[in-house]
Length: 304
Image (cartoon, rainbow, N blue to C red):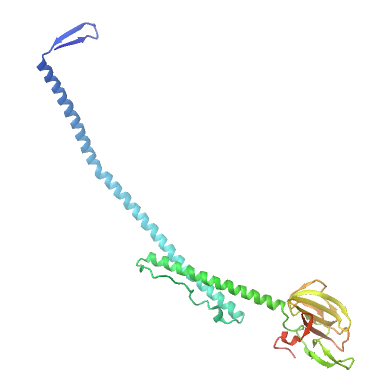
């Protein structure tokens, strides 16, 4: 076999003759050398990888351990927060019960109608028994939440009832028109103190001190404030629901026409104007334009 080589410096062509056996031997030697070189590199790479693998595994284990520790810490904090929430809910529940009891007592209401101590009517299928403290806390908070919702519903109902009662008490006549005095003439037939004739008396007369305050027995709007024959100075108040009250024989009217007055507000000064024999207020109650006995609207305890 001929091998031609060109010299880089001189540019001359050189020819070498190599036998076939010698050429094959050189070629096989080169192949073996390359194979050994590559195999050695691969082996060294494997060994290096095997040497580094335990370090990687250890790092992963440490990372997982840190993750679990942080997770445990977070769960402990959540558990503490749940415990605190449970205690707070218990406290709120107790305060709701206390507020409800005070409201019932202050309004002389039957506590059996609004029994806040009873558990709310809830239910459901029995689930698997919880063995974890976490599960128990979640369950307790759920129950407490339902209890609070139940009591808040009762409080809302009680509030609505009290507002309705308060409104009823405000707009419906009740009590007497003076703070101090006595009944000098009742509702019904009587001998008129001036004419001496038997006539029907459409109200109740309260005698008292001249110039003392005459008060409205219910909230409403003044529909008359002036002088009327026989009544003298008179104030008339419309309370709605068909009720009207009159306060007559006043020394002076304080309330003006169209004025909105509250229950217990001073509307006149006690006097003896009109057909009167002395200082008193003629108190009259009308229902749907018909005079009715005011006695049913006057407080049970009347100062005599």
